[in-house]
Length: 376
Image (cartoon, rainbow, N blue to C red; front, side):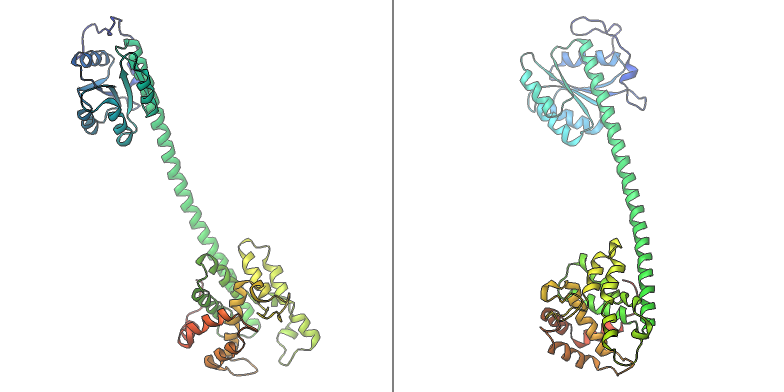
């Protein structure tokens, strides 16, 4: 389609440096010309070929769409009105299927309202027919420049998304490592506390597992169970502040000693409250000696005023205390422990939690008791 002395529709000599119009990879920009008038197609093709563009032409919108799918042009130059499917139909399909293809529309004089509609639907520009060669080249240059900018932004967005995804993966791995370190620290501390009280069989971990099983039976959301588990695991951390003479006394405690012992929920809360991920467990630690009827300590809370995790823990702790051997007595066994907890439903214990224990039953409790003690 090239000619020795190309001219525009109005006889204006062609000028301009086509190097700025080429894609970033240095290849010639591919342009598809769509018009039902063969004279117009040939004239446009001649003008653009002289400027270094690689041109294809077609006479209809549907054929144009097939060519776009096959050849992936950088820009489509399309007439508005054509037999069959029109330019707007082609524009809409290109926006859906090939959003990175620049589109410049050609419209007849007086049809500017339709031209504005083209811009609204995503065309880069529009020209009145017949366009001046200089206007045509400037419009195509603007369209290709905008396409390059948009593709560059898209590459940057994609690169940024990949980077964010990679960093998010790194952060997740780091958080897992930090959480593992937290767990290891907590379990080491709890093991030391159990050893200090001469507890055997991993009392704190066993109680935590019972608590978690009860929470599951009660339908506590998964997002809350970790906090409840940690609260149960750390329930006696405040006993760090109780002197050995009181904590390990073989006989009954006198009133002064009981007053000292009853401080351990508050002491445990004070230790944990400033640790961000242990704020909720700290509330359970503070409330783990409260009773459903309000006769517990340190605040005398009752019923739903007691945190749910503490109400669940109370049943789990009583179960383990009665079903385990202690220096001053032998285990009562699970049957008797469950009977005693049931007897105190509504006084010491939340009836709903007691019902959950009964639903798990002795076989389920025995299975939980036999589980290996390890971080979840």
